[in-house]
Length: 245
Image (cartoon, rainbow, N blue to C red; front, side, top):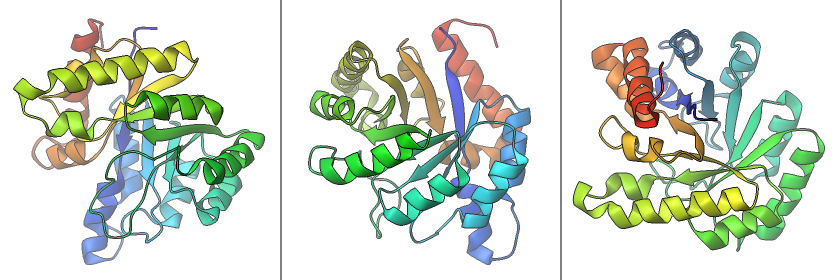
């Protein structure tokens, strides 16, 4: 299928809300706007320290939006239990450090294999669709296959931070990772640091089926409005795939 899905991460609407307390701006309202603007899914990361998304936000997203919810979580028993209770459409396990500003790199599946195996099996046994947020590294992808997950999300942060003339080798690494994952029967998503200027080359990789983008779109919404920001991103993605929107 040539269509590339866009998942909109609403975490940083909650960041703005929490800066002052209270209820505004409402991340669920942002999710509903994204839904009406043509987003294919909503992503929300319930961090252990609850710095942006709160438990009640996840519960409201489950109740109030029609789009699939991609529930990002650390590999902890607390988050596993929340996922098992709420049963979102998808669970993406991500690395999480208390002091980091944003997610720094992908999970090391090799060093965390036993803990991840236990959590993945419990989620899988309860019918949850699991993805793992990892670097575009062949060893990590091979380990993802051993963990029997159907989806990986490739961390594009390194690609996004490189100057335009230095991106070539990283793009090759991402392409090799996507090809290898597909050989192993694993679906590929990608995200982190993507914007209007750099998304095209990632979107043009045909075997990537979904991009998850948040911080940039929420920032652009200040200037364009969220509907227009999403519409522009979808058009760039579609042009990179040469399809109609």
